[in-house]
Image (cartoon, rainbow, N blue to C red; front, side, top):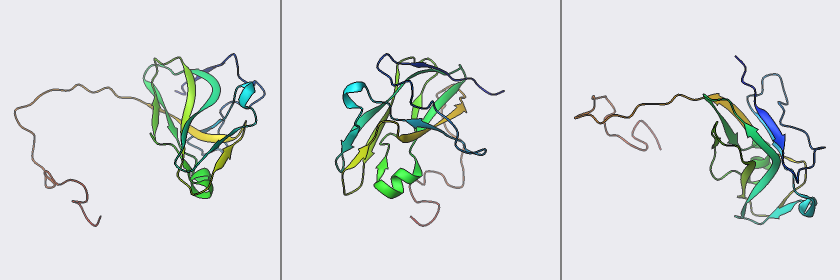
Length: 154
């Protein structure tokens, strides 16, 4: 079953900006675009190490049993050092507020995000809810308590 993600424009949104879309047949993520309110339509510039919430102009309704993961775009990361500090960000199915993307400039130079730019990817994924239970002991494995780097180099 293909989930349907319902969208609404926020009052300050520019409705001429493209809706989220997949750029190729095999794309896992749909591109999200910056959609600034009228007073910021020239875009915003992120200084090195600055982070900011970038609006998409949208609110979303995600079906129960699914989440929307917000992930960085690899081209922005490679070319400009732009990333998302909470990647992947999760939008829960019961959230109905504005869809924003927290971006950070990890590069050495300021970067301007322009109105309409593709800024992130949205991946829709099924969610399993677990039951958490205390146990008197846990089963043993070969790895045991080995933590970071315990299974090889690094």
